[in-house]
Length: 102
Image (cartoon, rainbow, N blue to C red; front, top):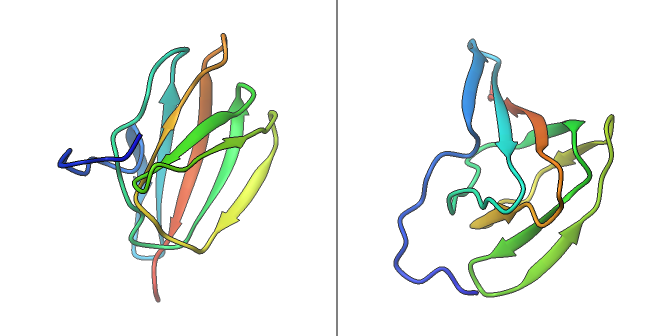
């Protein structure tokens, strides 16, 4: 579903740590929940610590399945407005590490 006029939110659930090099977030999406629409302003790495993937919904209406398992990590260098939806029956948790310019 396209985004419409919904405002952008935070890129993840909680900030765990921040310094001049990185900002580390926790993303928690319970079964049936959807994150806020958001856009990452920095390149980042995600590491799955619980769960088995999400649906990624883009602001243009596209939807992609993003399968993963515990221990899966990905580098993300492209930035587009999106949100994630947990259509599984288990909680999804990842650690998101934003890379700051130094």
